[in-house]
Image (tube, rainbow, N blue to C red; front, side):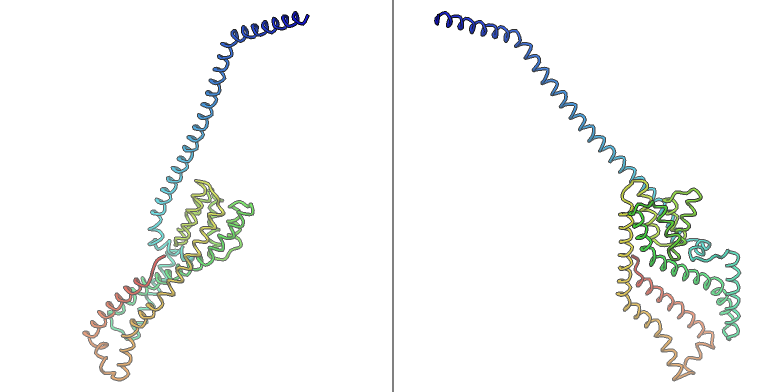
Length: 337
């Protein structure tokens, strides 16, 4: 019985092994094919993933190239506009100079005031007993020199007041943008609450925006009425941010910091050049002081300079050379930053 059971079990085992071998032989090719198909699918999926990564990297590079090109085009346009405005800022026409000085005066009124100034100065020089050739010179100086000199002084004072208040206005705009307000509201806040002349310049931006002009274009026009590089910097920052995007509050904060550093550098240069300015003042005043002292000690020694034609000629040439020396010293002491 035990032998029969063993034989049956062996037969069953051999039959199972044989069936498994037959099944494996029949299914081996199919399993191999399925395995190859799986490997091929994995290869295809990996290739698709690689292609997607490469495509994403290519798209990213193309987008960066487009942004770079857009930024370069923007900078080129801004550079062209700045070159076009350089002449207006450095040597603008008289009408623009009057506007930059903050004076509400028409050209006709300015010419009337210039004629009156020249006439008054000519009459004053004539009644003081000056030579006749000095009267036309006084009329020209009073009619052409003094009014324009007055406008130049008003322009410089207005620019100085603008630069003192402009960084504070930028800080207010930065805080407004960081708090979630749009740039329009920050500019309107400065146009309503800031001090002159910053208030007037930002008011022009608001008025231009109401007329349909965009904020970047209106900001780029600020140097037309405020002849200083800092106003141009503000317009460039707004234009670049509008074209290329970015953190506006950070850009304006950096601009405010740059303007404060420029102001500190100007003050440092002015302090370092005070010795040279004092020397220039002493050198320029020395001829007049010596002439006055000589007149006190020997009045008759200098009288031929004022009452003879040769003396008048000497005084004229001396004044010309003295003016040239003063202008040269002034150019040497004025350092642009």
